[in-house]
Image 1 (cartoon, rainbow, N blue to C red):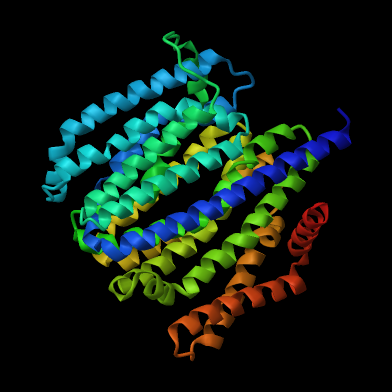
Image 2: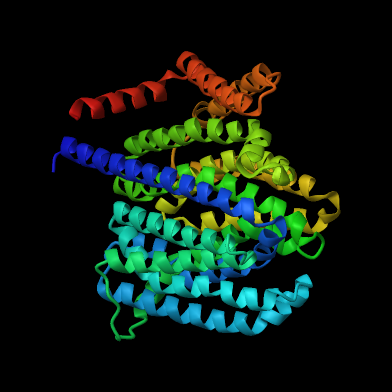
Amino acid sequence: MSSQTENDSLKSKTTKGLLWGGMASIIQQFLGFGFGILLNRKLTAEDYGLVAMITIFSVLASAFQESGFIYGIVNKKEVQHKDYNAVFWTSVGIGTFIYIALFFSAPLIALYYNQPVLVELSRFTFLSFWLGSFGIAHNAYLFRNLKIKERVITGTFALVASNILGVYLAYKDYSYWAYAIQIVSYSGFNMLGFWYYSKFRPTFEFDFSPIRDILGFSSKILVTNIFININKNIYAAVLGRHYSAEALGYTVNPNRWSIMAQNILTNMVNNVTQPILREIEDDKDRQLRVFRKLISFTAFLAFPMLLGLTTVAQDFITIAITEKWKQSAIFLQIFCIGAAFDSVSNVFSNLIISKGKSQVYMRNIVAFGLLQIAILVFGKSLGLEMLIALTSGLNALWIVVWYASARPYMTYSFSYLVQDVFSYAILAAVSCLAAHYSTASIANLYLRFASTIGVAVSTYIVVNRVFKPGILLELFNYFLTVIRKK
């Protein structure tokens, strides 16, 4: 295959991956947000707080059962049926064992939080990770073979079906059970979708020798996934004994929404970054160019999106879920700032994984998690706002750690970091501040909200056209080409 043909093939894979990943992320996050609004209007902060207290057990169990097998499969040069089969039975076995252990531990969990209702609620909610264990090998098959469209369809269907069920039950006054059922059904629908689209089917051949080959890589991913899930769900787990379920409930949706906004970008980029960077790992110059485009694209979108959400947080909360949730606005602002930087850090982490350096990836995630836990444990008397502000600030600073960790594997200078990341952060911040101060005097809530967004977007486009025209021109030319082809 000629160099030009390889180039075109790579561009095609990248474009399709970004297109499907982008469409999926936008559709799924907006659907999730829309259904979330309906749930928020019916459920209370206490309902969300109760489920949040036990969420960390489910996500940690999911990390254990997956054990990094998806990334382990992706990074294997050759994969056969026996590899997927070993992953399937190992995942199901681990998931079943952990569910049984947590089932009998439910009274202790309820005692820890002094919430008796958590006994039955946790036993039911924990079914989510057990159902998920049946789809891990199939998900790995789809991910390795770049079946992005199929994963998109699966995730979208699971999201819609589970949320329709959750909203229906919420309006039938099932309170926190509606939210729990939505979580469990989402996992079940996802698993069924992975089975439907994957060509892999498990067989009763119990050869676990492939697991030994995968474990050298995936064991580090296991530890990493545990701490990733701790990092995202630690607030309620650590602070559940010191703050009420209602107080914690006001942090749940801001955290979830900031992650939703972040996921629009990270899901899009994650679909292509590792496979593409691995495909061109022997061409260092080309890999650097591709990486800079990926990280610039992420920063170009992440900072205006998340800093913009910070700017309109108060009006957004009031319009979307009414005044009863106004205490959530400050938490949304804080979470979004950290999420903007974390979106960019995600590209560095994908680069490190693509180089097979799972130990470096693990070290950074674990170190961040331990620091975050220390902040929450030793600073619990500071109040929820200060604690979340400190952990969000840690997120922003951690991008420097990811940059330093990636440098040995790519000649990416600090000046590149400034050009590709911090310049967009500054331009987005300037645009958002201009929008805030120019529309603050507008009395009408809806007009102020729309005007702030309009001014922020317009200002950001203008300042980019003046100071950073590269990405804008490239996106414009790409969409112009697509339109001409039609």
